[in-house]
Amino acid sequence: MKEKIIRLVRDDIDNLTVFVDDVFISVEEGKKILNIVLDSPDVIDLNLITEASRIINKKIDENHVLDDDIYEVDIYSKEKGDD
Image (cartoon, rainbow, N blue to C red; front, top):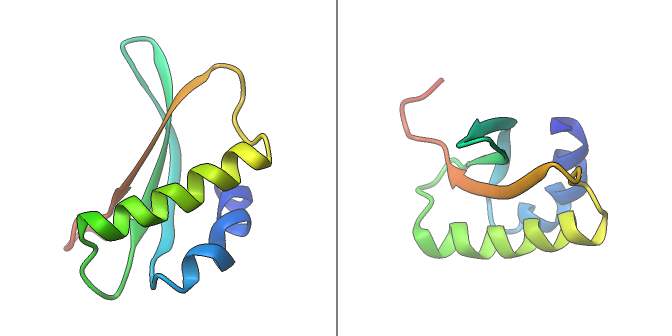
């Protein structure tokens, strides 16, 4: 799923100077969550996360990426210093 999402959103978020660093599914309180971690050579502020999230969510919805058992998409930035 990681490669599919990267291919799907790469061109649309490239002009924001952010890229998808990781994609994984986690389970919290019995609900599956699709986690999308963004990174950038620059600082990613809240406005940038919001703009990228709008683009990514639209692409995910338009292309019916989510399985029926995934309840939520969580998009956030990679913490600086993480490898």
